[in-house]
Image (tube, rainbow, N blue to C red):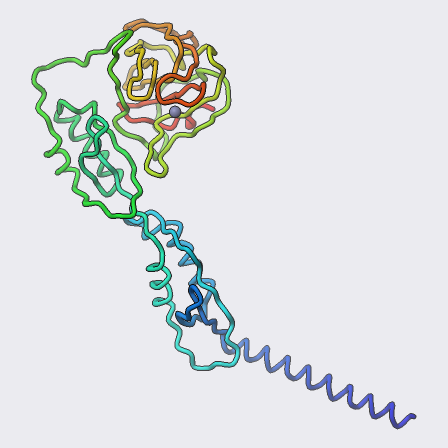
Length: 330
Ligand SMILES: [Zn+2]
């Protein structure tokens, strides 16, 4: 009996030693050799990598941000799968090739900026800066269509031919016939004045303080996404809610009608190129040329124009360029 116990004990000793030794060997191997992963995409082996986290984060970055130039983002159906190769040695890794194969398997979405004249896409430029330069150029040359030129951010699968801002200016420039001042209308058949650009960058100083035209929650934010541009914010409120002037100024537009989607709307000029816009209203309480003070009721909330429910569409423009109202209010 004693003999058997000693026998078992020595076996336990041997087995433990073997286990400990193999753990040490495996740890050593793992420490010396970086593990290699085989990479498959849609079930097909596309290569090997030693650094799957760097490779995968490069792929993730490409999917989210494209190439940083014109590709805005990439849609891929499947991500690569990694499995650890324990026994294979001297495997050639090919991270670059794997990256390219994954990139090629996806659909790239190109980003570019359309220059619109009177809501019609005319030309395309590669960057927002280039688009702004073109708009500024047409303004400087006092082109007849300068107030109808707008910028729209677009995302498309097909790359468009883009031109420079100089080409935009030379192609879209229209000589102003006479020194006519822009007509602003009062009620009925109003002109539709769109913002000539969108500032998606940093906050500019207005030089005045604003108050909320209506209290409520923001139901749609400012900015561009998926090809459409929202030049203001939408604030949900009940029909008939009074709309207050965000600051004192002069009414430069008060127009009933569809007005390019704005519906019945009011524009107030606050001086120094700062304007505020109040869209989709039911009734308009002010007329063109009228001076208003901050907080004065200029309209009531409604759902006129391109609108699916009662809300106030509120814009802040500086020299015709739409700013993000949430940089200032709400
Ligand atoms: Zn809106």
